[in-house]
Length: 283
Image (tube, rainbow, N blue to C red):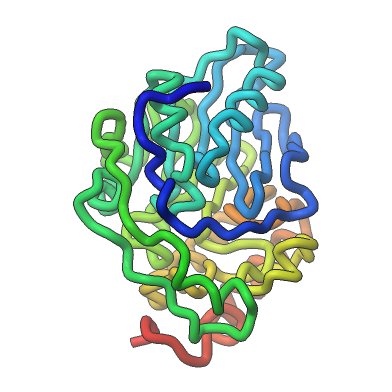
């Protein structure tokens, strides 16, 4: 598709890597579909047996709009319709194709009010910290884009009461720490969780583990996390909800007893498992 604006990330270094699961979608629940794109996941919320409409959670890597739109048509039909795009946060790998998708679908985008400066082009995120881990991705992370994007034409704050008008039964939770306005989405009736990067199920700092998708629960990606006290509280909040299934921004979904055990262990041992021994954002 020929978009009418310049690629927001055209001049940036984008990590040339992908996972073995990239492009292989997974139906976690009848109305919850996880699509890995290179090193990050996007989610489609909607039951294709009941409707051709859906909500997209996060917008993937740069230059992946066609991949996401093709996946939407394959799952929901050629005449499918996006009702909204919900952002867990605005890092480059979660908004990489946002403007292209919003323009193509002519759809509203929603983010937490504390995330608005970063998705309206008014502020940049702090630069990544390469000192947090010995893994190769951590070491090259300062090369990743940390600038905000200007999606101001489409983006607006989420309702303050925690509701999501286009997602009946779901509510958003402020799970800050990784970014100031990071959110997760939770549905009480079946305890389904879309966690974003509040916690992940792969060691995101390690190139080998990212490529192979070796499943292990971790806190938020260390190199971009700037408030570790808030990150700890966010994980404890999510653990207290006792989710039955969790899709995270990076890594394979976790379900059932394994999710319960691993998430509780992370909440109880967050300092040992998640927080780096050193780093510029520790204090």
